[in-house]
Amino acid sequence: MTRLVFSPSALQDIERLAEFLMESDPVAASATADVLTGGLKILKHHPLVGRPAELGYRELLISRGRTGYVALYKYKVERDAAIILAIRHQREGGFLFDNGGLSPSTPS
Image (cartoon, rainbow, N blue to C red):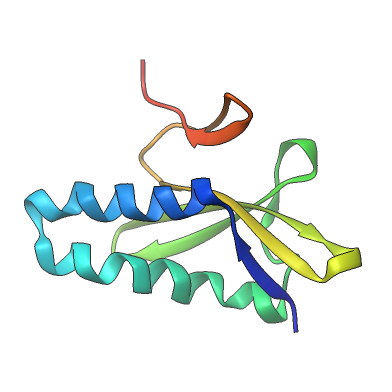
């Protein structure tokens, strides 16, 4: 079974997404981490399920109501590990490299 490894950036993204929801919907905010980690569990059995993205990365869509989230990850065959690099809401822009890390882009 493939291991899931969360980068510090991905953990910060989960916290950021939950904090954003806290203002408008505290109930949804408290469930955000569960929705995201639950959605990512498919990678344990199907690590290549995400759509191919740039530079050998993959993107996994995680549904939530009418929208959802996008998780950027890389599957390391030799380690049988899916490295979760960043997570963003579908309405945010794509992912950007920032100071060696990944973060969701912000609309201009």
